[in-house]
Length: 343
Image (cartoon, rainbow, N blue to C red; front, side):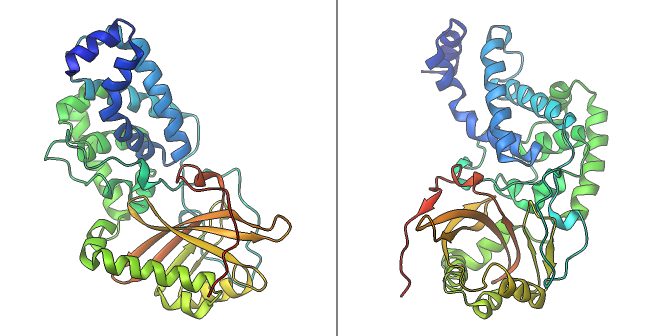
């Protein structure tokens, strides 16, 4: 069925036709909400709100813009309302200086709003609807560094940059979506570029992963996983860059450098008798690992954290360990796994 046929049926109240109508856009809308909000949980809520508003307002859609543009207008305005109600999301490196690895890592700062990981399973393939003028690749635009940089933009600048540079809408289309002038769009875009470019690494993870190849990427993760599961701190540290950073939201504590990370690992997460199982996953278009910690009382490994790995060549330059079991469901992972003896 064509889009026009589905649209006519959906306007007549056919919920199945509406679901089929928005299906090609659903995953991309969710990724859009994640870029705007920096939270997979908030993005899912924003997506549901967007679809509900679209369903209720379908009769008023007159087709003066494309269906895609109309849906992104609703999603963007939904996200702008959400941004108004909460503080900016950050990573620990944006919150304070690195900590002493011998100190207690402290308590979670629950009053802070932290950037969250986003499962690759949620990502669609490259947006075939986007204009060739889009500045960023779809997966590049959900990388942790990019999403964290976006959070430093005022909400409207953030929307302008994403709509223009990620989704490839023209300046005139963006102006219509945000109810501003094209001149205001290009002014906001110029300011947004300056802020984001100052915070992005020289190389995206997509470029790095392509340069080292899939086999090398899998080998790096396998080495990291094996070392962690065997409690071999030296082997873990051997996979890290000399100036590696390690963060652990919702803890504000973070460390810089191999020596600091090694000292922390020995004293805390990899101290005996703690035991781990680690599962390779993909998050934010990057390599990642899901960590399970042994629960002796329950005789099982419990979901503990998702670590998003940032590579520089063949070394791990950054790993952000998100210390919560909540994202595991979004990654299609169980909250516990049975013991598997290591060789």
